[in-house]
Image (cartoon, rainbow, N blue to C red; front, side):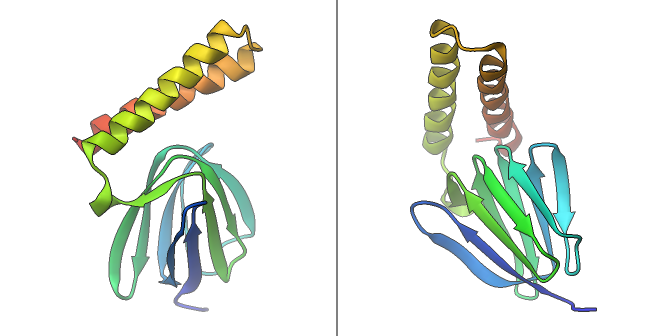
Length: 137
């Protein structure tokens, strides 16, 4: 059994990580999960949250706002809508993300979107606000 797996994290702006990981905690849309070497093949969507990577070099954390994770046992690739290393996240970043989520929710309500889209926008807003509280920024 392998002790590590290849981990890659990319966002539209940049590649944030490419390293050997022993475990990755993923904020999945269906619930948090931890991927480890030899994990069953899985594809999941991400919700806003903290992605935590454990590697032989230490632990690193990233704020992600959504996207997808693909696990194939030997590798884990995360394609994030937005991602920032936690040490770069400021209150201003969070305020901007929360305001964008508020606008999406407001627009979904005003445009008389189907209930599912309004509920998705409300969930995104709640996740972003909870993330700000969790991070104590």
